[in-house]
Length: 227
Ligand SMILES: Nc1ncnc2c1ncn2[C@@H]1O[C@H](COP(=O)(O)OP(=O)(O)OP(=O)(O)O)[C@@H](O)[C@H]1O
Ligand SMILES: [Mg+2]
Image (cartoon, rainbow, N blue to C red):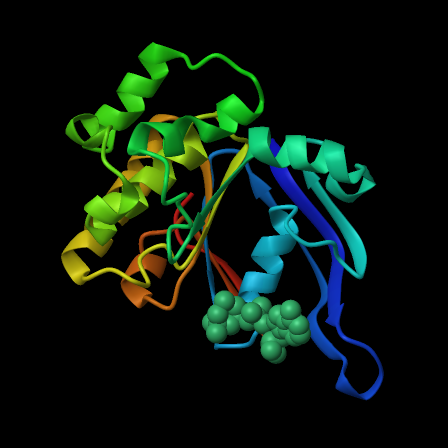
């Protein structure tokens, strides 16, 4: 089953002489439970692609379907709700809310949705992330690796259809990078959680099921590593 399908996706930033074609007619699909890595040189359009998959920015043309929902057919309110429930985003610099505790940061997507927190699920996630004894801490009281684990918890709490990570280990040392990747892979394998990761790190690319290379806004290569 395809959880993600993108069709002829293009993104042009700006107008006229300064226009930049960041993404040029990209199409591919991803199966439920797949772990896909996206690699490519700086400026090739990786983050642009991830933002379009995540409903963060609208494409110039083309379509994105997540779990059969046509993302850009939704109005702004519907898109915001869909994003909160179905898309888990993880960034290089964590993007946590500084005045909220670990527990509040993780459960924020549910609270915004006026959904009850499923305590059992919450406990399972924080235990797997090794955050059980940090729930009352603020982000600035945590190490970088711990902050990234909080952002993984926040991304997972609403059982999203896909998890999207833009260089999730880009700001971490090698030991923390390895731990974060092990956690993401564990959620991918144990819960069949679809995972798309942008990285510059060859070692991470080798751990994926599939590697898509982007060059100049286009797919240069799409290789299945393991199936
Ligand atoms: N908001 C924007 N306005 C104008 N141009 C942009 C904008 N965002 C990105 N671009 C341009 O689009 C192209 C693709 O950028 P993008 O951020 O997607 O690259 P990337 O592959 O993620 O690079 P990196 O590996 O450095 O993060 C670049 O030429 C960039 O300058
Ligand atoms: Mg980028």
